[in-house]
Length: 193
Image 1 (cartoon, helix red, strand yellow):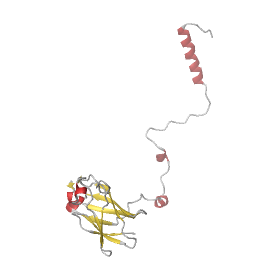
Image 2: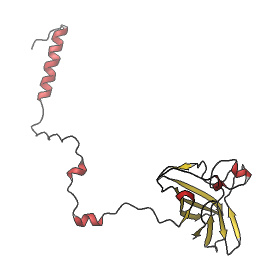
Image 3: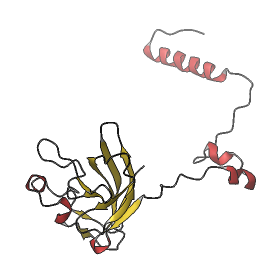
């Protein structure tokens, strides 16, 4: 093969070389391309009835400890009440609107203390009442008077919910039951562990 020093000849030589390399290869059969849109999961056999019954179902949310019912169908489901070593009791739950229309949350939920009111709508008015020990526990506040609870609550759309929390001083370990009270909601009995 004669190599031309011209630019056109160099291109012909490069093209010939690339065709020669492309023609080289092994004699192994090429895998057939997979149709678009398939995945490994679709190529595996479907589980048998026995296999299906042993698979773990999706984890369902835990049963709430109690549900407090408020105005216009709003509900507060308390999902946990945990004491910590620092002497606090943290309550977590979901405030939900199971109705078919939007609900404006009542301002009374924040309570009527001046320091709490100035920080906007919250669950700052929540209390725990220990009937046996004859004590009432209020939501804790920080040094600026902000309640240690979910804030910025104003409304809930139809079928919507939001996670909430409140932190209280922990009742004595011997106290195993309190009444959870939130303005505009019915009192609810809350068992503590």
